[in-house]
Length: 327
Image 1 (spheres, rainbow, N blue to C red):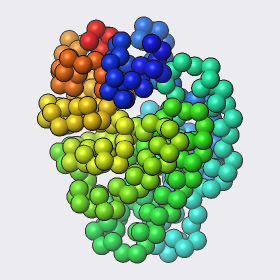
Image 2 (cartoon, rainbow, N blue to C red; image 1 turned 90 degrees about the vertical axis):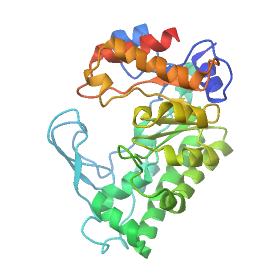
Image 3 (cartoon, one colour; image 1 turned 180 degrees about the horizontal axis):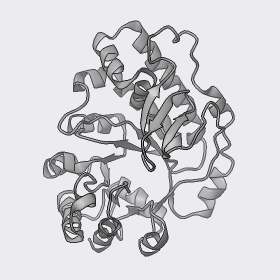
Image 4 (cartoon, rainbow, N blue to C red; image 1 turned 120 degrees about the vertical axis):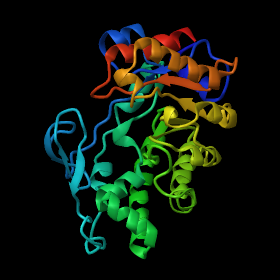
């Protein structure tokens, strides 16, 4: 069974020979536990961006938002943006169409043909309308915008969505196996906005991305940090095939009871506590807990994965993949 077959079977809830993994680490960890997932090479023009990401200091992204990081290896925070102070610039503001118009995706199809891994473009290619709206308006101001729902916030949403639909249209015409959506919707114990507002204002956007992807035969993976239990049913309804969520912010056994076999759970293991300060043995037991909850004597519907963070212990990350290899 190839890696591509293994991931696709897990997404379709068919038996696999072993639990597939996404391993973004390099070096010895990649050699010992090769990833079943890969991202194809591509090139976007710099557009309005300048400065280095994940480095101390200031940088500007492709939308003209200014970020500041106080140390290396963190993305930092948005400190200024074209629409942060008021709505006065909304009429003339334009998304970075030049980035999409100048995108070079010519290496994508050859990379897909040359690999037996499941190919999915990652961070630079993903729609993230809620996060982008926060970057452009500031988080606090956007929450006020969503409370009052004045016409301008709808115009901002639709403008951002139009950009991401055009970006998604580029990718679904390539030979990638899936596409990625990413918006962090959860705080530690609740959604950041009410489920009702989420369904009315944002859910239709994600449904459009899923419809476009499925029309071209692509799987859809959605990443969202925090407590997102109230909207997982909605993600299933609109056609999200897999969710990359912080399972340990929620009740794992309740999630499995409701949703195992209905949506694939793509990682992850607690990076707030376990990966930073637990023992490798505790990490392996956490993996076994996820496996007991979701696999239920059927080896499918799960992709093993963990993120690398600045304060994570490499031996704990290795324990994640070691444990998945023995499930």
